[in-house]
Length: 170
Image: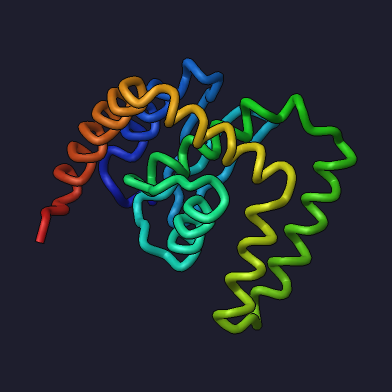
């Protein structure tokens, strides 16, 4: 990521938009999203359309009757949801979730497509994951104008980042 121009600027722009939620920093990574409780920071990616994104979209529709309009936004708000719900989850539950995540990751390495869906849905239903997702869906549904404004500001920063790096539509 260090070869790309403007990464730090993009990280700061996204962190500024997420600061009202208590997020202290945002970091662009190659793939996946993450929340780190020790410093209230998130990692995010710019590429979507992965199998996990498609399964998460399907899960959201099945579990919450939520139709994804922007996978990036629901993914970011899911990570914010971890921050917002962390105090409601006991250490024992978090330990259980971590153990289950490790177990699921180990099985995923050799899983078939059908098994992958089942395993991803098990992951999405873990207590910490479902609470973060529920928070995200509720927030997005309850605050559409606020979410749209946040997205507009982030999209502007992303477009500048893409332009600086020679990425064009096509």
